[in-house]
Image 1: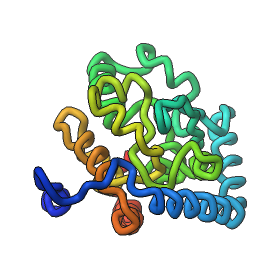
Image 2: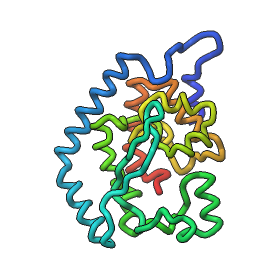
Image 3: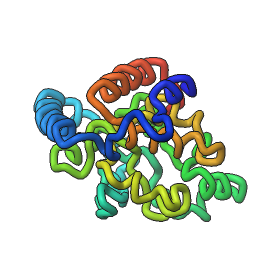
Length: 227
C-alpha cells in the first residue's frame, strides 16, 4: 500500500500539476457514470431493497433507515441514508457504551465490537448491505460512487485541520481509496486514514477509480476491515 502511494507521489518542482479533484473532463465522466450506474442499480435491485427493508423492520420494530448528517462537497450539509444496523436510541452514547468504548469512539469515531449493533446489523455491515441506500444519494448528487468517506463536521475539523478544505473539494463517495485498503485497519490515530483520503483527492483519475472498484469487490468478498 505504501509502495502504491509512493509510485504516484509528485516530486517537488515538477511532475503532476493536476488540481485536487481532477480535470473538468474527468469530473464530467465521473458524474455521468454516477447517474447512469446508480439509476440502473436502483431499478435492477429494487427487490433486494424491499427484502432488506422488511428484515430490518421485523428485527426489532424500529425504523428501517437511519439518516447520518455528514459534510458534502464544499462544506454543504448532506444526509446519507443507510439501512439501520444499530439498536434504537444508539445515539445515546453515554447510556450504551463503557467509558473505554466511549473514549475509543471519540478518538476514532468508531468502536471495535460495538455493542449498539444488532445481530442483523452485524450481517449488514459485514456484507456492506447497510450502505445500499447510499445509491440514492449518488443519484441525486450528494455522493459519488468513489470518493473520500462522508464525515461528520467535527470529524473533518478535528482530524483534517488545514487540509479540510482540500478534502471537501470533491464529493464524498460510497467507496474510496481508504475504504478499499482495509478501512478498519488504517486509523486516524496512525494518520494513515487521512493520508489515504487526501491521496485520492490529489490523484483521482479514471484509472485509480477502476482500481478502487476492483479492490472494493475483493475486500467485500474477503471482508477485509469490515465491522
